[in-house]
Image (tube, rainbow over all chains, first blue to last red; front, side, top):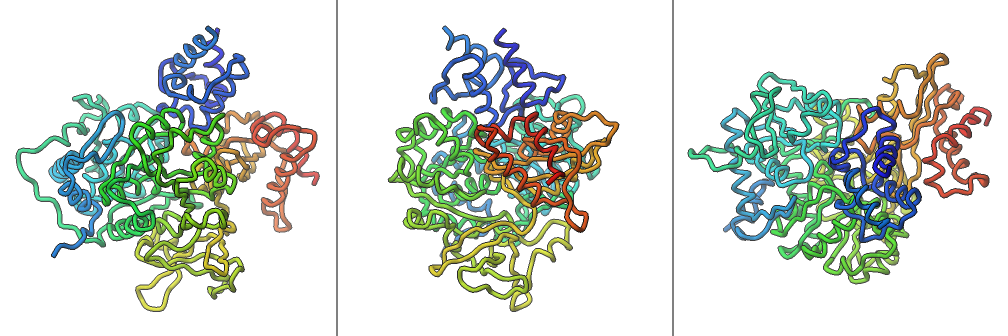
Length: 79
Length: 551
């Protein structure tokens, strides 16, 4: 499932496999899970893992700032 | 005859008198006029005085960039207090060490932060907690806490605020030290007002400037955008991060931003976009860079894409706020220079004995002027060490610890550091501090922190550790440990578990050898990967670094 794959990536990459993964709807930035470089790392993961292209214009909080938002973004991109 | 105000907070009041209805601050969906910011901060100051807050008391503001953070800064100043802003991304042990070191009587933070980790620890019995969040009641664990929103409302009675001088303390700026004790840089109102005035002068700011501030207020570069704007009567558009690039570009476009202070990692992110967003930046008049050297390639790209925008490449350190700026008309010819001393500041480049070095030769940069700090908070030893006596009793030169050279035109060039500091995402990080924290992780025998080149951050922290034989330790465990005790930008991006560390003849860790081994690793012909990928891919590096001690 898309959501599980995203949650797993974020937990592995930014929480160093902590056994306490973030809630799906919290702000990744406000909860201090990712920083600006982290967002770029998420984007490159999304591009390679889900074979989509993230456009410059899509680098917004509305698309990327929680596991839920990223999931709907991917679903939308894949049509 | 009217003279200029001498207090940071009086400048806000004066500007509010000149332009009461002008927008001072755009932040978190709010637009506050000068009159509103001035009134709310006066109300907060009065409320603080009623709680027993006294002139000279320290106050810690642990909030992200927000209207509440700005109102807190000015409220504390008006109440005669000395503020410190801490990034709420810092874990509680870091915040608590600053509360303890500054002996803060007041902490202002967000409700959400209180549910994280261990929470605040106060050092004095009469400490006060103020919670920002819009709710009406304080959380169960903090029954005596006050709610911020109520304190900025108008009081019925008028409260006398303390009388302040320009040499009263205004803030403590905490920075990374090597000993493990936080280093609080003491700034008076005079330090801050004179620094702001010099910078405003060379940037040519006017009340028509609209400045985008994406840098945290805990960072003096971010903080001074507000202090300066409130002096020249401009508007600050305060954002809490640059992470969502398009949201920031939309804000620049919408608010018609004219001034954009950035650090190299922000310019790197703009240049990483598939198409440079020149159209969204068309309102800009100037861009400034400091925090770390602006790569010449970034400067060239900005000149090409935004030829109408003035680019200011600058250099400074929190101990004296700012040292130099390159006049923008010189940037094409001298893109690697950080220019000339700012107004009201003198520099010299000296050798180990304190004598000036010949033109073009490297030496330590020392500076003097009214923006230089008073010293380090409660640390006479370190204060004594950083200053060099001048020609008369009150004159002191600040030794920056940075190596510079000056060319025949008087332009300054950064050469390097004398100690183990690196610059990452605009922050100075002392590598000894990282080692000291990691040494607290059970099961290690040795640890060495080194700088690792990074495309966005400039440099990031890399750590090599040697584990005790019987211990099974993972890289992730060490990163998780660091996350609990260090600010996010200090957490090592890369951890290598190695068998042993190379030593010098004196038995100390040979850092030069370590850093050189890293360079070999990056350029290794067999990797065929880009720098950052090679550095970030854990397992592979681990294997290669095992061979270190064979060198």
